Image (cartoon, rainbow, N blue to C red; front, side, top):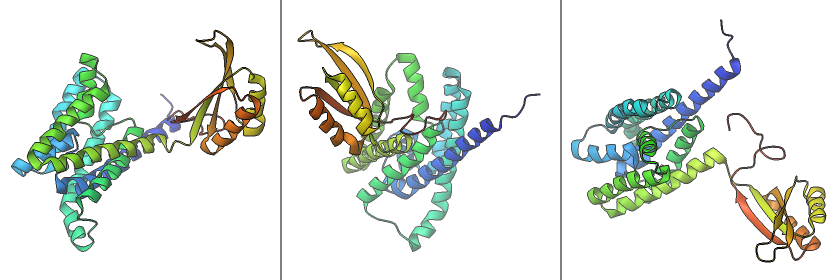
Length: 296
């Protein structure tokens, strides 16, 4: 008999909690801010808005039914049980959240309205939907639809997911522009952009780290200064100038954003002729920064 690994059970429960909260938040945001103004910002939810406009069928039902054949096709082509099951759970919760919101929210909003401004609703839709989607992505799932289509097309054609999503979501937004007007299409694009930014923020957090690369002929002085005064670890390697052919040392150091001015001051002090590159680091994981965990 296999022993129960409680750490694995806890991890799965955490994933389920992320999916539950994320899909509920995304569904609530969709019903509150997106569907009332026909903001079809791509995805199967966008297609559901388009069909609902002509048929009057509930968006929650349309969304769920359109995902069923996609899961069957996805399993046939992808065969990834963990991803598909997690995504199926997210789709079911998202659809349920939309259905419950459509049933009970009108009563609540009649008493406590949030906003009747389309632009504000667009901003809220992008941010709330992105937060919900980010939580779902953290759990290794998606809200179905175009994510499954995108992965299948990627497997078959070799195109990048970004190209596929651009074409699929762009087509849906274009259709929304034809049906609802180009102002709504612009709102849909804004929703997509904010959605992506909010999801990235949930997945990776605010970018607080910066990575500096210093090309210098005085590596030891700079290395010692970084370690002693910045309190940061350093990596370095040898390089050769492409134009001069002379040897140089590249010193790399990852720091927090407030330390950037100190780093530049130290380089200027020890080697004014050095060449410095400082870039935004999306994530810094490990000693001195965020702890590296298996879930990351």
